[in-house]
Length: 157
Image (cartoon, rainbow, N blue to C red; front, side, top):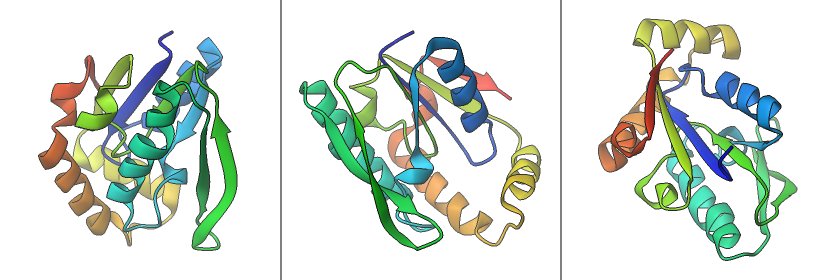
């Protein structure tokens, strides 16, 4: 298991499920981008927090400290921490960027047809009121970073 594995893909592509399996199998801690987004408009904010607030300190040999987004409260909540050398699986939309790739030992991009992803997201979230807004942010992330090209592995789910 690599020290830092990043799993990215569009909403509903299976990132959380794969991360859970990898974490269980290897003992790595899983960090969810859902905890780094500042709400439904926060994909790019989450990417920056991952890069600057988590990966940069860890690579510099320092502990990383950040606050997790509390979706119910609509504000930053509990503090979290990761230690240098701690095996991590980081999963979520926007996790694989040009900047974050420089700090990851392994990167995976997941793909699935939009209809499949939409059905999965609807089953998970209960409604799709944010689907289009989130898709626009995913599109911007993909246009800026081309995460599939940054990945060591592209998997269809």
